[in-house]
Image 1 (cartoon, rainbow, N blue to C red):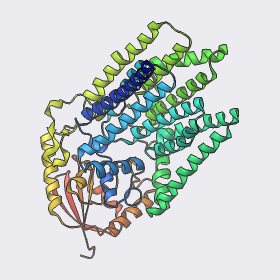
Image 2 (cartoon, one colour; image 1 turned 30 degrees about the horizontal axis):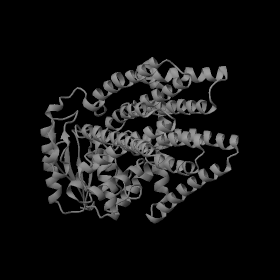
Image 3 (cartoon, rainbow, N blue to C red; image 1 turned 135 degrees about the vertical axis):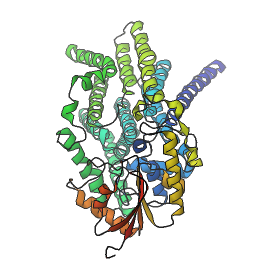
Length: 533
């Protein structure tokens, strides 16, 4: 009896140990990656927006975001709990890397893959997932939550677990309100296979729980809109109509699109860029097709394979129509692990399992870890000397641990500019708005600088400009916010010629300005004055 108890305790201890290893590693690998390098427009996208929520300036209602609503609120939570600092910001992304890695590990264990292999695949995923960005990034939040929803779907089908069917639509809801894509594509896949399962198995209890979870999510959305007094038209334009216009232009390859799908349909993008995904993806497709043709294999394994195969297509399609660096290489350990499970079912030689692990860990993971986490390719820092990075604590103690280096400017020059700009803004006690991609300055000053946008690009990619069909609504919203907040002066701060007043001034109706330049084409103020004078 004592021996049995000891074995059970040893088993529990081992499980906890493996979970702890994954959690510590996935947190640490993202933490170390995130603290090196900056791409301002991406790195700080959720910094001041999270802070603004704590000042009761809410996304969609008070400033234009068009995506990432859940990420903003989650960042506000991390600021509230851990302090309004850079470290809290990185903690957020590191935490999400832990969530994704542990979710993947538990998924593999539910599929009866042994602990050792599950651990190795999870560690590979942790290395290739969030560290490519390091800081909160809407696509990666949506990507991780979409993956977790796929894992939950597969286990819910296998175990017929009512609780999983209930939480599945809630996870999909959070994924969509992190980023509309790739979550929308994954949600369509989930809906199809969920209803296939409900109808085929006549499992109406599971259907009721799935429906209940969906209704709870929708009711929560309406409750949020009501309690925050967010105008419904703000919500519709920002989270649906404007993003749909972007997707339409890219998919239809309109001339004004930032990136066109037709330009992505070439050998390099489809094959070369995804070559290490295809190394594992094509064998999985082959084994799945073979099972169907030979009418062999478990039905559940066939469904699992198809869900994974279709999901990979969705993720690759989304990657093609975005303008980002590739962030989906963490699909490789997922595909490899599913391939591993298939090989296990057909009792393949042990050599193939060792080969899989060798390719994933010693080749793919090592390669992309060095390129993205060490060289920081996602931030375009691959060919930049990172030893020249300077601690951003020069700007404020709140930025401690960030080693500042960017692709576009000398770090000392840039930090000096930012330090001077922060001091100037601190001394100006007027009601002001700051238009910049350095979206951490409100937090540093602990002052609401009345954000207008999350991002400021002038190709109709982040907000409507004069050529866009929704520009009138956007302009009206901006003017209402300027008036409501009694803004007296608007500051512009950016890289050289990045944010120019000639682009901004057309947003304002019946407004005149008295402009002053502090650093040519980089830092300026524009006081709102009486047009009669």
